[in-house]
Every structure is written in C-alpha cells, then in structure tokens.
Amino acid sequence: MKATIEGSLQQSIDYGAYRTLINELLEAGKTSGPDQSEAMVGYTKMNVVRMKRLDKTIKIFPETEVVLEKIKRPQTWLVITEAWCGDAAQILPVVEKMGAANALITVRYVFRDEHPALMDLFLTNGSRSIPIIVVLDAETQKVLGHWGPRPTKMQEKVLARKNDPNASPYSEFVIELQKWYLKDRSLSTQQEFSETLSRIAQ
View 1 (tube, rainbow, N blue to C red):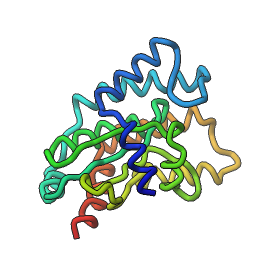
View 2 (view 1 turned 45 degrees about the vertical axis):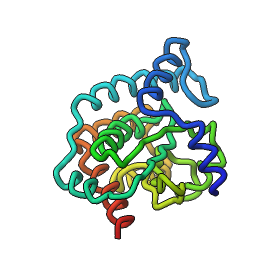
View 3 (view 1 turned 90 degrees about the horizontal axis):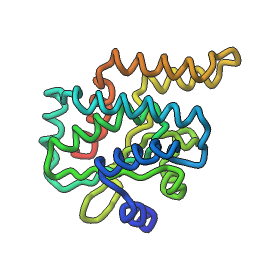
View 4 (view 1 turned 180 degrees about the horizontal axis):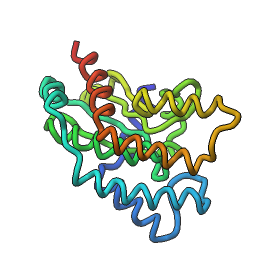
C-alpha cells in the first residue's frame, strides 16, 4: 500500500493544474479516461461549468471550520477522480475550499484510470466509485481515513437505481443527481467529510 500511495502522490497534481488539464482535454474534444465517447465528453463540459460556478459560490459552514481548525498535524488529501464524473464536479470544489481553510492541509488529485492499484485500495462495495478522498499523514503517508464517493443520501439513490430493473435512463438520473446537489448546497458533503476528519482527530 505504501509504495502505491507514494507513487500516486509523485504523479499527483494540484487543483489549478487539474482544472487546466480538463480544459485542455476539452479543447481537443476529449475527456479523461479510456472512454472518449461523445456522452462522456458532454458530461465533462457540463462539469466544467458546474465547477466554475461552485468555485465562486461554495461557502464553508462554521461547523466545518471548527473541525478544520482542530487539525494540528500536516495532512495530504489525495483525491481520486475523473473529469467526466458528475459527483466529482460537485464535491471537488468543496474539498478544495475546505483544504484551503487550514494551511496544514495539502490537496492533490489523480485520475482513477491512471492509478488502478490506488483505486483498488479504496473500493466501494467492490466497485471503483469516485471521487474518493484519502486523508494521509503528510510526513509518513500513512492512511488516516478516507471518504467518498458521495453523500449517504445520494449513495442510497445510486444503489436503488442499480437494483431497479425499470430505472430511468442514466442521462435522466444525472439531471436528478445535479438537482439534489444544488438543493443540498454542499451541506451533506461538508458534514460527512467533517465526520471522517473528526474521527481521525480522536
């Protein structure tokens, strides 16, 4: 595990580089990962718009700030993601803003399909669901905890859809997903990730 994490960290990028890379891919008519279908590129275009909006509007709640202030040792948050992922578009700006609230936190990003060994360390019910935020001790790279791929309420919706033989088309579900995140205003993401951070601090 340690070698896998250290190797991934060496190839990780910061948020600015992540956003720039996605823009460059879109300019070439591409997205991240092996699936370069028109649908995946389309999802990526929508995600860029959402992330740009969230970067400007996300507010860190006072309760979240209290948790972040309690972090007294340097941490690295290693985020496993892909450009086309709708959940990532909603969660990454929140995580980035949370990380910026404490100078002891460094947030880094890697693409799932470029790091399968890392991804397989943090499966969700056996699946490579993203995004996953891995919290590391910055000095030792020891895994302190992880959170993801999405808030519990949304995860329940995803699982219910997988078990529903009459589920709506995925394109319609994506719209439902984005509406839920918009209404939630990042509250669930901040609360649940903060709970993970609080458990680490105990």
